[in-house]
Amino acid sequence: MTDATLTPADGGAAEHPPAAARPGKARWPVVLAVVLTAVLEVLDSTIVNVALPHMKAAFGITSDQTIWILTSYIVASVAVMPLTGLFSRWFGRRRLITSAIIGFMSFSVLCGLSNSVEIIVICRLGQGLFGAFLIPLSQSILFETFPKEKRGQAMAMFGLGVVVAPVLGPTLGAVLTEYFSWRAVFFVNLPIAAFALMMMSGELPKEDQHRVSIDWTGLALMVCAVGALQLMLDLGASRDWFASPVIQVCALTCVIAAVAFLIHGWKLSTNIIDFGLFTDRSFAGANVAIMGFGVAMFGTIAVLPLFVQGLLGYSVLDAGFLFIPRGISAGISMVLTGSVLLKRFDARLLAAAGLVLTGVGNLAMGWLNINAGFWDLAIPGVISGAGMGLFFVPMSTLAFQNVSPQKQDEASGIYGVTRSMGSSIGIAVVGWQLTQRTQFHWNALVPDLSPFNANVWSYLAPLGMTPTNPAAAGDLANQLAVQSQMLAFQDVFSFTGWVALLMLPVVFVMKSPPRGRAGTAIAH
Image 1 (cartoon, rainbow, N blue to C red):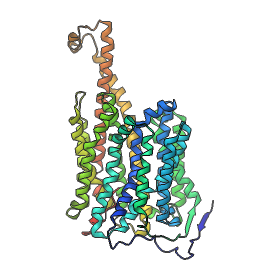
Image 2: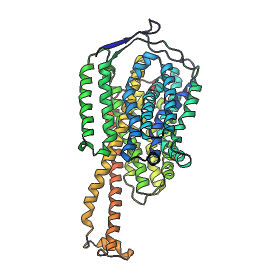
Image 3: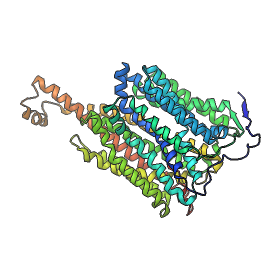
Image 4: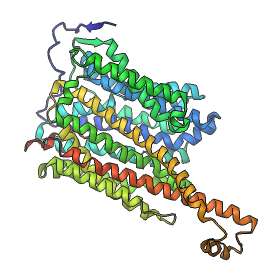
């Protein structure tokens, strides 16, 4: 394939960076608009999970087919997100973000009107394609709209939306599904998107189209690599990982395409991704740290509903309410970090403190038992939530401190993909670990269920049974399953805690931002 060059509409804007809103005056309508825009994307990544059982019943499909409703959205979003910088230069930020909001809103309505799994999967693909641009563009617009002295406050509000929204997504999804319908989790996007468009109207300057050289070979290789990896992560647990030919093909495709992409574009000036961004140790380290944090945060958020609903017997609503204290804690922490703490402390120390709190909160979850109450679960969530707020804004400060305005959209897209990949890896790994550790503990506990074990007699005596009673076998098997799962959940929560703590050395590899630049954080 050959490169294609797109000529700018004005014929001479090729060398100029994208225009931004005038930064002399803080524009709070822009803040509100871009926060709502970002909320659209991150909320949709978690709110739909709660409605999946209802969709399964409505469409009469299997669990494997249900997974595609999630997978189609994530794969499309992750595959397109790195192209944000390319499309922004091609169309201009205002045109691109407006089109993305309208497209996302339209496909959300179509998802809510779907009457078959095939239609909703196609519509979810459309949601992912348009939604991929929302967070990177929102970050870049907000970054260039506000003066430095106001950016800390603006980014704190932005972070409040993008961090709290996925945490509270299950709660909102549970309420909408319980009192309305699973279709409401898609229709709720309509008023949010419409209000964002209204607030954004007239606030963003018109931009000229720029000359863009597209390396079609690199584009195809990158989409294949990222798409195959995401597909492997999403389908791995349900297909027994590498025992499945589908997963084997995905893994092979990912490796071959990724290696070919690196070789092809290493010294190519028109490569889809500017590898030069990763020569900055702060940007490279931040991508590693955000991926590890994604594993710790989203891994815990994904497995917590399974724990409280499947093992502790919580209802869907009660499980959703469990996320509220975590979300409030994250929101308060985010505001304090962006508006106060970043001005007084080294961003690396704040990010490290966030990792420690997240790790401690997750490790505390690993000490829970089958008799855990609501606040036994909520308090570790509050600790982890505080860690989320402390981590995100400082980490974005470190990541983007050396990125030029011309590369802002591209860097934001890469950072967004890394965060998404971290969440996908976290969900996939904890799901696999939960299955493996449950089987491990089952095998370890079985030898103790012997009629010669005094503890077995002590457990059965209050029930009026002995080990020789036929009913005792069923009761013991049930207890064995419960305890095996409980120990497996403890292992998973501990694992996510240690992953967060293992990111600490990465934070201190990065450069500390100069004084006075702490307010320029881009919260993701």
